[in-house]
Image 1 (tube, rainbow, N blue to C red):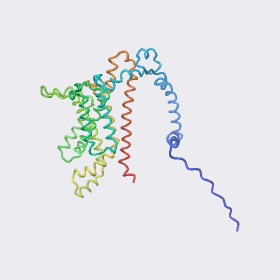
Image 2: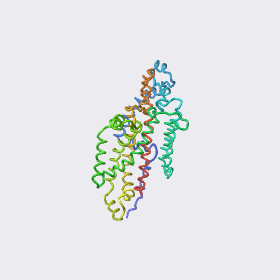
Image 3: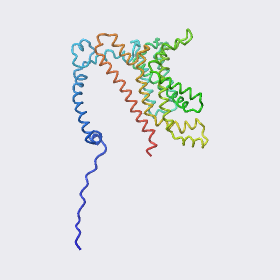
Image 4: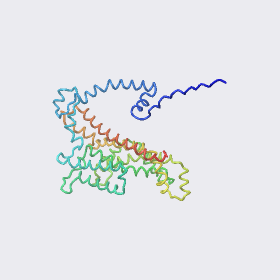
Length: 367
């Protein structure tokens, strides 16, 4: 019987690190030869584009509010247009000496929106805070009380008007969309028909036509001497438009809930509204968070269309500032880049918040 020779097993390679920046780069940028080639091509394009863009935007840029100096040397960007027209961009045609009022109103509204997005502030008093802040907002902006001078709504504008239109329209559109989505699934023919006609009618026309009707056609249908402020009419138009699209998103979530759960709720003796509130809506809304947030972002950007009815929000205020001053008109690209950056900050923040909401509502599926 021959002796058995012991042969040790070769050492295995160390496990590949799956966390951290290096692991992310290896997995996403150099995971395969196709990905590697794509990364190298995109890297070459960025190396070709970014250095001159960086030089134009920062190194050779002019920051002082001097139109003559910018015109003399066009090698770099002229951010002086933002410095010169900043107040008009942010506050529109609001009286210069009273612009502390829209500044305070904007800070209050932004603080309320941030607080409403944080779980620690989801208390019973949050609804009262909305009423208080919105009341303070309109008192500051409109005035004519507490010693504040009167400023008509047609002089409101800039970022303040954009935030007002988008936040209020989204807040009012969500419950309306919820009821319309439930109405479209109702077994009552009258309610279902009404909701269907509303959705198809609103979705069949562009928002600009809704704003035109709300601003110019609606007053013609009112009795003589009766008039509704143009800001209220525009806000109603945006709300109704956003609600129609959001209702279809919510309806998709309602249809995705298994019918067996609804039948089980009926077996337990739950009423229709108890079933919707405790079983159907929590699941349906959790499934359509990306679609709802996409609708919110779209509404925020669509507020730029109110310029057609002479309300100069963020984009309209930029156009107003440049069209009224021929010295700064050649540098409109820099102005609109600044506007685009503001839109990006708000839209990106909403997108990241949407991802956080998705993680919160999907925790139960990870157990």
